[in-house]
Length: 308
Image (tube, helix red, strand yellow):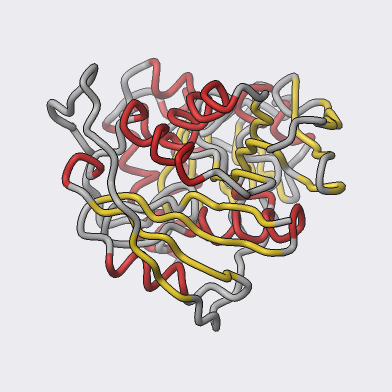
């Protein structure tokens, strides 16, 4: 059996999520190939070829793949799917967009957001905001699977796979790229960051969120937020950690002024070390925290930032 991993990238850099997807795919099928779709992606293809355990990299390069429209990407994946037992992608924003289309075109079920591989046809995925784990077995001839990248180790470097080029498909006649508004930051990207400092409703305003940002800059950390903080307009929604936001599993997660609603915990409870700062000693966040500080964040954060 051979699995085909769809590379996640920005046309310049191969994402860490792809390395995790390769690890998961190797547990499913043993042999792994990688498909790189995009525009001017020679560097991405070479990075994929350097992943240990990858047998072959197929590169499909065209201008209409630059922005990863599902209507254009899905047919290409389906065209390359012949002979593969598993089609695997990271459960990123893009992966969640085009993989259901792939499953529909192949007339199979999609198995979403897995956190463990039990065998070639059996997988474990979280349900009920991560409060329960569901074991799913598929009898489909080809398994279409998205992988929660934070649940799998990053595949090592050291591979020397061959890179082949395949013909591009047609641009989608039903959709076209118009524009993108992206937040630019010198801080680490939230999902793969080793340290994450998140703020919640307890900060009280967008101005007070600067306390989080100053601490994050000192630690070289990414900045996150609870949904309550995002809904209140303190920060953009791409900061949101939780069931309806981003899932993170850093070495250190610091939750400041976050009560710990179940939806937020679903996005960060796999963090290796969790530190909670909240003036409410009964806040649910303390139930999963490795270290908890019951204190006023407006007193603690300036002292903490000054002492680093």
